[in-house]
Image (tube, rainbow, N blue to C red; front, side, top):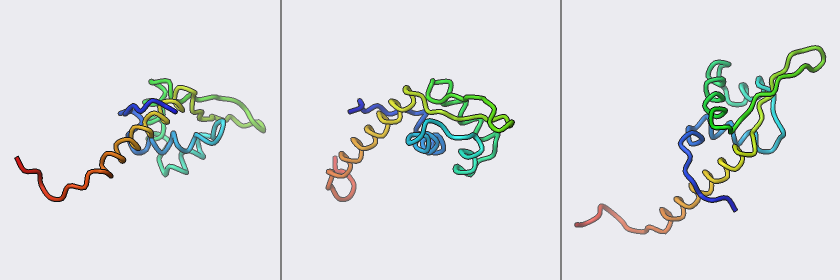
Length: 107
């Protein structure tokens, strides 16, 4: 079970979606991630730069069928950070879900 930790880098909505999209696979082609997230190349690059600066994602370059390919990979550190962030969101949701007070607080 991951330790619940709020991660402000992953929490940004596009970055959270990118990380979640990368979880079930070893890596996805840059263009596939771009299209799935409905982002421009430059916007995706900006988010990947922020994630890579923390060691959460990596870009692997190679050639397939004579064509240059860039694959986006969620690193083990990225997977751990994502799991910890989701665990923290779940923890927070449980707290909110058990608070049955109605209306503003009284002093």
